[in-house]
Image (cartoon, rainbow, N blue to C red; front, side, top):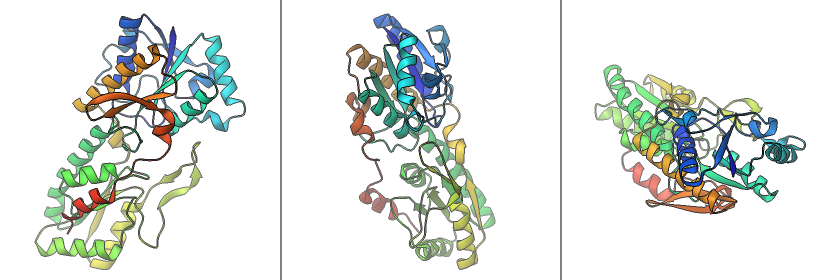
Length: 341
C-alpha cells in the first residue's frame, strides 16, 4: 500500500513527531510506502510531493513546524477540487491519506471521505478546540510558552506599577487563556465563551492595585466585550471564511487607562505560541497519534480520526470530531474567577 501524508492549517509543535511515527511504524510493521504532500491540501490538488521514508524523518522529533509545509488551501472552494485530488491520488498510486490538521483540514478530509477517498485524520490544533478528543498536540506547548511569558511579565508589571495585558491565541475557544492564565497567576482572564464587562474588569484591576500588586490580564484574541463586537484586523477572510483577529489587547489597554488612570501595556504573543520545539507531552501524544493513525489505515478504518480519551488512543468518526467546537465550560471559568481581582 502507498500512503500519502499531509499537514494543513496553522503550523504546530508536534507535527513532525506525527509524521515520523506514521512513517516509522508504517514501514517497520506493515511495509508500506509513503509520499508526502506539500503545503496542506495544495499538495494533492497540484500533485506536489516529496520523498517520505525513514531517512527523511530522522532527527525531526524535536523540531517545530512541519517538514511537509502547510497552508490554508481549501479544495472545496476550488472548481473541481475534489475530482482533481482523486485524479492525482490515482496517478500517484496513493491508496490512502493521513490528514493531520484542525477543524478546517479535517472538515475537508470528511468531505473527501464522503466522495470515496480513503482517509484517516489526526487532530492538531494549539487551541485544543476539536471535539471528540480530550487534548490535541501543540496545545501543551502553547500553554507553556504563554505561561512563561506571563511569569516574566509579572516582574515588569511590579517594577513599573503598570497593568500588563497578555493577548493569546483563541478565536472561539479560550483554552490557552484559561490554562496559561491560571498557571501564570493572572488576575483577570477573558475568553470568547464569556462576554466581559469592561467596568468589572477595571474593578478587578483597581482591587489588585489596592493590595499593592500590579495586575496581569490574560485575554484570548476572540474575547468580546458586552454590547461590543469581536476586534478584527480588517474585513478580509481566509479560504475557510475566517476573519483576521487583532487588537483586543490594545483595546483593553486603552479602556483600562482611560477608566482607571493606571498605565497599561499590551504584549501580543501571536505566532510565538505555535513555534519552536514541542514539549515532552506533545511529542509523546503526537507520536502515539501517529502510531494509531497508521494502525487505522491498516485496519481500513476510513473516515475515522484518532483521539485521546483519558490515557487511551481510540478512533472516532471524523464527523464527530468536526461537528462542533469544544469550548471552555462555564463551570471551569467560574473556578478561574475565584482568582480574579
